[in-house]
Image 1 (cartoon, protein in one colour):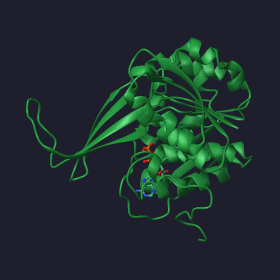
Image 2 (image 1 turned 180 degrees about the vertical axis):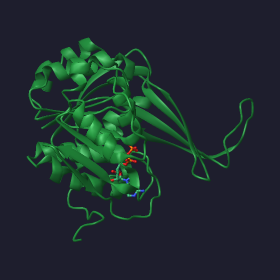
Image 3 (image 1 turned 60 degrees about the vertical axis):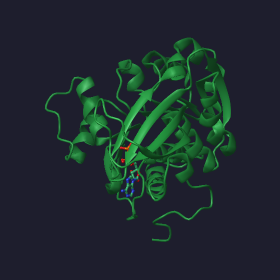
Length: 301
Ligand code: ADP
């Protein structure tokens, strides 16, 4: 099955007419508390698509923990949780009517997913057919998880943090968007960095840097996958985008589910692109994810 080691947040989403300037007070329209965090989102996405999923992470002993875990519980994700002294991770999301977001993330308990916590789950991690990691927990914890992996390791390095080079290069695939891809190249000491628009050069440079496989997500343009010396592009089906929050996580979770089910990387990416497109058609991250059997955009094309 899939094991995710990652972040768990409560997203406090406020909608407002316009963003306040420093020192200013504005009235908001509404506030909703939604489950979020990249680790949790990816675990939910994979579980809703039928994969057996375990999430290793941490929450606080506060009221936000229940809100943060609600989606994981209803999707049937098995939880290996540390109950931390820090508060549950929170993202304060302000969305203006014009659709612009400003976000403050307080890692809280996610910063307590320390190396020892990961080490204590070594046997769970070693049993995973697919291990999924992101950049929202401490860097040394990511390296520790990689050390115990015996199956496939997917690293979605979002945000791009400085992790141990050999742990990073264990990613098969590395999953990044074009901006993250350039930062990873920079981190690996690659010179002559490609521009963000030059997708093919980004993915080729990442392959050349030593990744066995790379997936580059490209928003409305879909995704590219590089493996075994070839690069393929899967355009996203055309949809009317309502809210792209968590689309990248839907993509990663869907890909993990398919890899765990035995699909090839290339066919998994073809599927994940359609799951990502499904997730932008409605509000929120986890609430916008498809379940097994839901019709995906691009089905039957
Ligand atoms: P991130 O938010 O991590 O940068 P992307 O924006 O690349 O991730 O989105 C991930 C996936 O979601 C894309 O590969 C695509 O499948 C889907 N997606 C995102 N935005 C759109 C869109 N506007 N139309 C269709 N699909 C989209």
